Length: 196
Ligand SMILES: [Zn+2]
Ligand SMILES: [Zn+2]
Image (cartoon, rainbow, N blue to C red; front, side, top):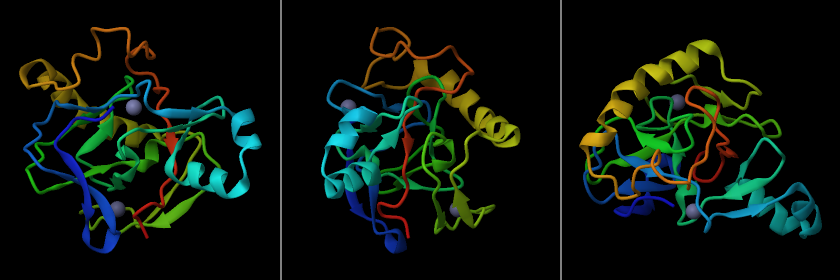
């Protein structure tokens, strides 16, 4: 389930991506897994025909148990940036970590995906400090995790002070989630999509 006020749109050399139609303040919960997100177990995946399986894997996200989850409402169209304005909070939901203006692209850091077959791609994010080639990894380097937490901390602190169209993820049973600080059961997504 993603917040409203986002549309799929051309994003320059990256092809299609997600663009904000309204201002989205830092601290807004942008996406949480929900019942409408489709999920295939490893057995389910083995049973679908290869072309369909490739499509599911291309757009979906691997979980730690080998299942693949496909976020509803095109949220899988979010492109990677090495300086993303949305991050996996590592607490079971995705959080805006910068003020995102209407018309601005939402971006995500794919380096959080760690349950996948190997992949890599040349990054076109254009950010200062772009790492160039983004690769899947089985674990998140401590320095990267620390950098994310440094960006997450002020956004987490703002959560109670900005509108939350998706509600309070800490309040309901929707996100049983892992304890704070441990890697979330966040789908390990496959890049590709709009990225070259
Ligand atoms: Zn959903
Ligand atoms: Zn980059």
